[in-house]
Amino acid sequence: AGVDPTTTACSDGEISGDEECDDEGTTPLDGCSANCSVEAGAFCTGAPSTCCLPCPAGKYRSGCDVDGDGLIQATGECVDCEGTTFKEEVASFDTECAALETCPLGNYRAGYNRSYGGGCIACEAGTYQNASGVARSVTACSACPYGATS
Image (cartoon, rainbow, N blue to C red; front, side):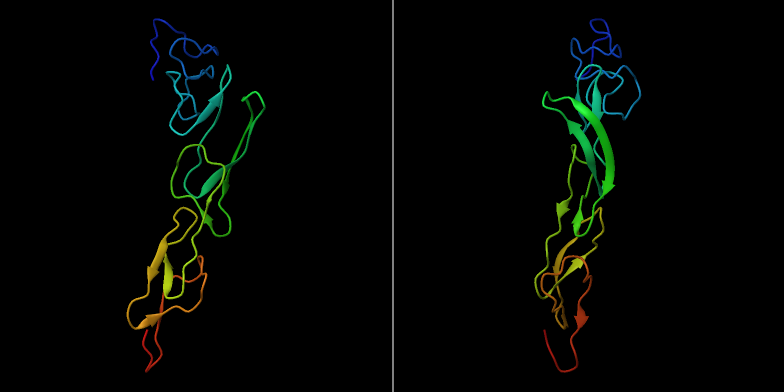
């Protein structure tokens, strides 16, 4: 939603007319756009508005503190996904990373990193992977020993 400049005073710190937010500024990518609309994925409250922003792939927002009145008290920071978690894309305001699916026997993980969960791929004929519950550590299948088949 855009703001009609003839009926509202965007950037005055007051939400009026068609404004979704008003942070008293015109800086882009701070959660509240120069035309006083909430930017993609952001969460804004109050007047003047305070916004928590989405984080890039591989990170989540920690510490965006919203009080009982629904007002943002702290905007927090972007933190790396840990362990066997990931976040593939910038999405709406995220507070956690997704758990990584474990791969069953005979499968391996393709392309895992904190920004991409990859997926479980079945081993090809003549190869194997015998560690069950593999989350991210096995990234290929091994050739079957001489005389063995998969």
